[in-house]
Structure formats: C-alpha cells, structure tokens
Image 1: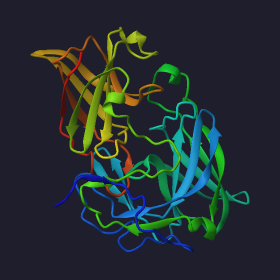
Image 2 (image 1 turned 45 degrees about the vertical axis):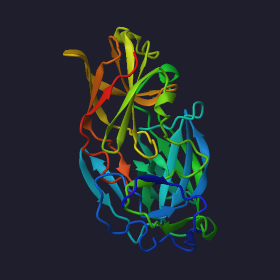
Image 3 (image 1 turned 90 degrees about the vertical axis):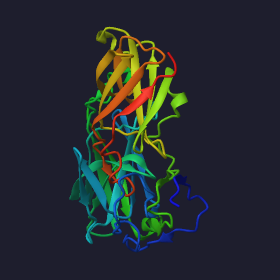
Length: 351
C-alpha cells in the first residue's frame, strides 16, 4: 500500500560520502523514473556543505552546496528538465531572508559571480526553487575549473511584489555580498547522498535542520487574525484568515477587512510562492468580493496573498482559483506538483 507521510530521516543509516567528486549514486539525483503528478518522496537524500553567511543591504544570505542533480523549471504550466551534466561540479544554493523578522524572501532575482585570484570563472542565475528538504531557496548546477577556494559574489535583486507594514520601505533596492566558496576534499566530505527505499511513494522527506530560516507556513490556527477555514486542491492546502483592517500601507484601498490566503504544500507546509490567485467571496447568491488575491510580503503575515473585502461573515464561502501555478523551479518529488490545481472552496467557519 502506498502510504502518505512525511519521512524524518534522523537516525537513519549513515549516508554515503562522495569524497573527491560529487557524482550521483545509482538511484540518486538524476535517476530515471516515471514522474508523479503530485508530491512524492524523492528517491535520494542529500547533505550539504555550508559556506557561510553575509549581510547584503536589507538582506541576509547564506551559501551552501550539494551534489549536482536534475531540476525542473516551470514557465506557465510547462515543465522543462534541466539535466545535470558530467561537467557540473556542484549544486549551489542560496537562502535569502530578512535578518530582523527571519522571513525568507520568496521572490527576487538572485545571481552569483564566482572568481578565483580575481579572475571570474563563472556567472550563474540562481533559480527560485522548491525542495522537500530545503524548502524555498535559489539554486543551480555550477561548473568550476577545479579544486580551490573561490570568491562568490551573490547579488540579490529588489522585490517587486507588494510590501506592507514595516516592509513597505524595505527590499526595494538590489544589494550584493561576497562569501567564500571552498570546493576541496574537506568540504566535499561533508556532502553525501543515499537512496531512499520509500522513494516514489506519496509523501515527502522532512526538512533538513540547517540552522537557517525556512519558508514553513504556520499552522492555520497560528496565522494572525480570525481563522476562517482551510481548503485543499491536489497537494496544496489553502488557509484563510481575516484581519479587522488592512495592514499598514493599504489604507488607501478604502478600509474594510483584509482577507489573507496562505497556500502551503500538503506535507511540509512550505509556502507556495509566485502564484496567480483569484478569489470569490459569496454569501448565498450574492457575490461580496471577486478579484485577484495579491502577492504580498508583510513582517507579521509573512508571504501571503491578500485583498481588502467589505466584510466577512460566518457561512460565507470563499472560492480560490489558481490562474497561474507556482512559477518556481522544483527539485525531485515536486516536478509536476501544484501545476493543475482545481478551484478550492473554503467554507468560512468564523466571522
């Protein structure tokens, strides 16, 4: 029987080190398998080599690497495989967050320029990505000319999405920071991968304990405001809450209550960013609100989709239509998830 679960791998059999190179194991990253239409347990577990943290303007950024592996980009509803190659040295990952609130920045262009002895050896765009063990991050496979310690300059673009509260005047400008990138026998010994017996089953690996902020959504009851209810579509869960007033910066919308929608993955509660969502709030045969739920970044609400509505009452119904699926690249286990989501309905349980 195929069981639905989150797999915690703490205390599992020791991983297999890949000292001297970062090739995938048989059955590991990049293994051929029939892709699932939903979330499934990835077929391998990996560890990573942390490279440090730095401050860049309003942002804090951390850099790490692991084994090169296939990943998948999403444009609209089209999925394209980006296969690892024999030339790839590592899979480079960056996590970007607000150092004050600890909120992971869910959108924004991130790139890296890698140099050694002042000579640039590669420049890469790091894709926004979803991973079962890392959550939301930026990453790409990178080719290096050989062993050594490099200078990695990470550039973070400003956020173009709506920002509210104390975030209104932050994250508009781009910034960069330089971090060391050590690709040596010693750092490669920290990187390991091993096959997962349950790979392919519905479910997901538990997030790694990296010590870095993660894009995990709170339990629905932990969201600010009055919890209205939850709805599901595929492997996405939509939690809805309402505030008595819009957050600071939206007063010009004419008052009313602020409707908050927090989409997350079924198993690990990872926030699902870069979606197009449209909401219809109805009361019997009357339409109270119909319009876009706008991508918004707020220090208290985090990354969410929101709109100002005239009022919310018990027994109202909220219909959520996904007009655009999450426009993020995916690691294995997520490659075809969240693409074709039917409208979800939330029966509002509180006023």
